[in-house]
Length: 136
Image (cartoon, rainbow, N blue to C red; front, top):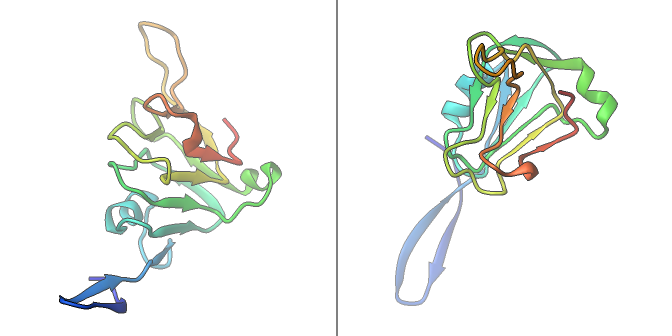
């Protein structure tokens, strides 16, 4: 599925293919951010073009970067993930490593929990290092 970047040769060891890191462009390569996440492998980047994406996303335990390419906080205004269903808009809750990163988005329309009247934007699974340059 992924192109081979190199073949590792070690004495006494059979050649092992090493997968190249892939950049998946949204919406050019995949129609939604979640489809890009689903297609991504460890170390890959899901690069999202400016616009509004009406969906909820889940990193599903993957060590990937989902980014707009934002370098500063103000850049987050150009790309919006707007919750399309009940619950958190972005979920990091399947043992994602510290290398799983969301960068450069405005996160909005996290649906309210009727019981607690709480906005639900990002479920970090207890780890704040997963997102950068994001507006909530």
